[in-house]
Image 1 (tube, one colour):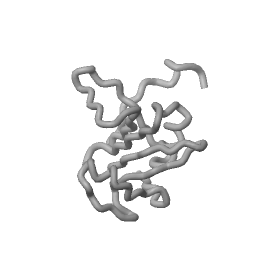
Image 2 (cartoon, helix red, strand yellow):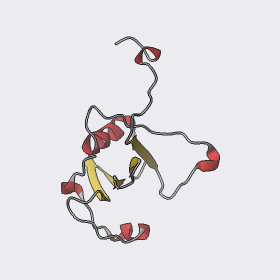
Image 3 (spheres, helix red, strand yellow):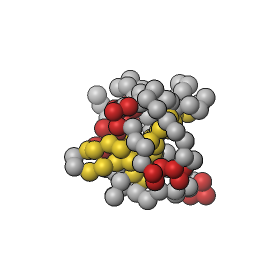
Image 4 (cartoon, helix red, strand yellow):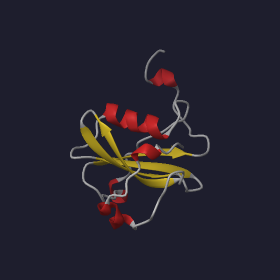
Length: 119
């Protein structure tokens, strides 16, 4: 997992989530990323032993292209990163207009590409 230190943030609103002090090189943190004139607020955590996680929020729900830009900032092209649609009983909503990216640190099972279409 990569952490784009040039976008790290110390925004006071981020203290709501624990007030942790993070610095360049840490495997977690808050980031404010401008994309096409809009600001995206990102929380990233690569410190868990099994999962890497990035949450992305803005004034509206991020679209596919914006999520791809964030994915590319935090992971390499050859890494499988997913968005889950969990059972409704497992929903947690702590931020408005927020989507999540996840990467399993082991080998992530994936369906065969032919199920989507021919390459």
